[in-house]
Length: 346
Image 1 (tube, helix red, strand yellow):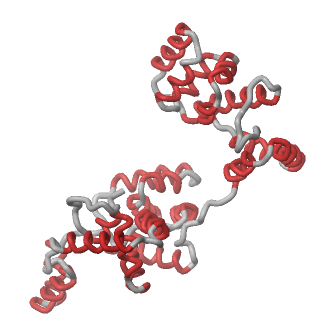
Image 2: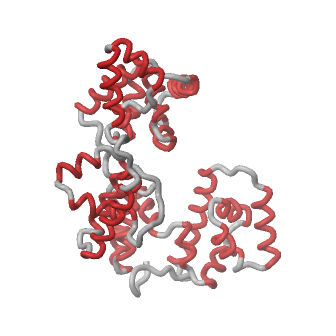
Image 3: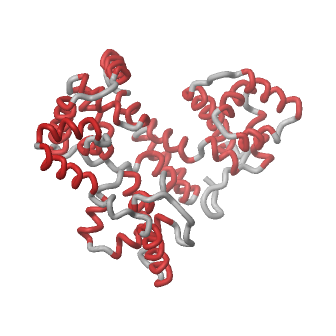
């Protein structure tokens, strides 16, 4: 992500002062009146706002020297800001409208003015994925295609996952065929987004809790207590208890095993299964695992991995889960020890 300070000041980066850009921007915002700071933040995208919000908390106790550095950085950047650039768009439009009239001005500006995304489209970047998916399902496909086109790819992919296959194909086709967007289509989208905003769909949901967060808590608990809690949970919801157990020690945590325990686990795993599981990890993890094996076994795994082309993420996940099942079984039998929080084990 570009430096939030650079975005805030609208300037390219030059010689970097000692203080980080995000910290400098955060300090400057905190020196402003609340309403002024809020006005500036409204011009940024969600990720930049999140980044700056964190920086504001981090710099809440900034020293006098850090404040001076932030102001120096601002002054340095401001020297290169042309007075002509400030409010240029609105001033140019006003002059042209007064000179030739509204109709002619609109025609001239449509041809020569820099094009930018409609402000209303920025609302999509703040909306919850489920809300966006709902819009795609309920609105005209042409509006849906426009929505799909302005989303970042990751959000767009998740937004169409739950849609009907026919609608998915239609939206993707329409989005691929878009070249320019008529003003009427923008107006329709503005109306749709305004309605969604009125319904309170704009703000993204905060993800909290779930098996992953509970697993982190369980790993910090004494062994006997966590085991007792898991047993009690299994009586109520066996699948949920299993999901928590899976999150308590994931494939990446194999790095935490000592060499002997890791070797014991991998000897009990099929070579083909291990090759698939390692296909979804980094080279460091591959080297760590294969270092516990004989040279011949290690070469066999590497050959199998090399022969693989594209491997489905679901196949990798299943292979890793199967290996982690072996880990849990060995840990329960006392064959290996899995380190948990503090001096305890889980």
